[in-house]
Amino acid sequence: MSYHDQYVLATYTEEQRSKAMERFRLIRPYLEGETSLSAIALDSPVSLRTLQRWSQYYRKGGLQALVSKERSDRGSRKISPELVTAIEGLALKKTPPSMTSIHRKVERIALDNEWTVPSYGTVYDIIQSLPSSLKTLGNKGKDTYKENFDLIHRREAQQPNEIWQADHTLLDIWVWDEKRKPARPWLTIIMDDYSRAVAGYFLSFDAPSAIQTSLALHQAIWPKEDSRWRICGIPNIFYTDHGTDFTSTHLEQVSADLRMQLIFSTIGVPRGRGKIERFFQTINQLFLQEQPGYISHSRPSPSPSMTLPDLDRQLREFLIGTYHYRVHGTTVFPPVKRWEAEGFLPQIPNSLEDLDLLLLNVATSRRIHPDGIRFQGFRYESTTLAPYIGEDVTIRYNPRDLAEIRVFFHHQFLCRAICSELAGYEIDIKDVVAARSNRKRNVTRQIKRRYDVLAELSQDPRRRAEKAKAGADSESPKIKLKRYKHE
Image (cartoon, rainbow, N blue to C red; front, side):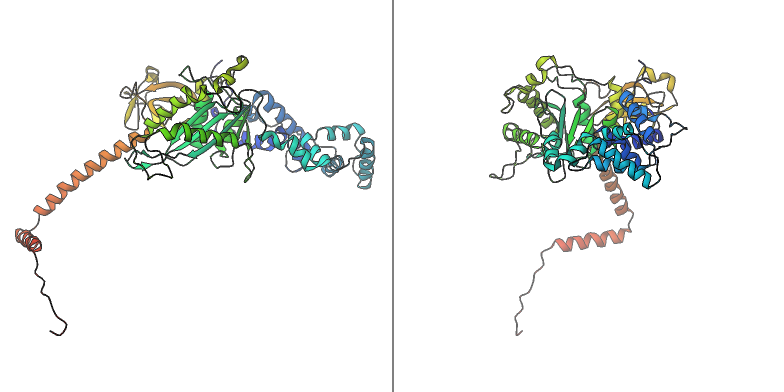
């Protein structure tokens, strides 16, 4: 399968992506069982038939299928929108009338308003198209609705990768940042609800944002190089809170393209968060307390002794070497063993390039020079770049590792370019920025010192002598006479 045939929304133009997302947002309440297509049609300029067609397209081909053009021969609804609403209103009563009774009432309403009288079958189809969530809430009340639908956010997943949870926490530990100042890092974690295994994580000094979540999700979905860390795949449901990082347009597009349903906890009522909150307690009690720089409320604030990469290495080893093989108190199984039970096979994206295109950072456009691509003061090379010298390309990169970049030409993956200086190392982009800033400060100080000497020597010799004499006088001790009140 060619890259063009892999259905990735990011290969289209911004206008096409925006149009596809508009269509997806319109039918999303129906896809997630919150309302009917007929109800959506009443509140939008799009016909019911078009909405049905878009829903079919999405289920068959994903988000990219919604890029296709609208049909020019829209069909007109024969039933009045007001009459459709009346039919649904009758069906959603606390004690709904029989189907025959509803049809008779609808027939009378239609005749009174000189509308086309719908057939019994049409009325039946409209009522049957109502989502079960609406019927349950209307016919059986809030309590039954919560029991059957609202609790989906709290229930136990029945298999691996059915539900993933994501959240952030500010760790109780001081580490050195890139400027050698004490700082507390943020941990973004993605956990499999069924096994309690960690699928991905990200450490950063920056406050939570869509970037951290995207990088953690990239790590979570793709198979890991470490054979001990086998949790991967695309989850059915990605359950998060209402933070702006999780509700960003970027992640909305990602979830739609991967056919991964986004579910948000109710604002102020974070149901289901207890599992990941308990995980953070485990990190604090079993890992952080053993690390230098741990912040304890019963002891004075400690000084840092680790950098962020040091903490990252220690945390990774704890997760995949200790936590995953430790029996979990609730499931009574080690997380990795429960995830692998019964030979579970995860769903993986078509290629790593697809995932990179969705989730990795985007740099500004770069031009290919005879010696490669220049980025962040480094030079990246690949033999594949030779025929493209002089062309402009888009590069994507992982901020945690600048040893290689991904190169895209006209929205299609071209190659991976390697920096020979960094090959074999993992270097964070912030380390590069910090080193560059330190070097610039040192050079600036050296220039300033030379300017000061030049300015001093450029002064008139008599003024320099007067200034030197004034400086000598200021260094001589001054005798202050004691004065009395009546003197």
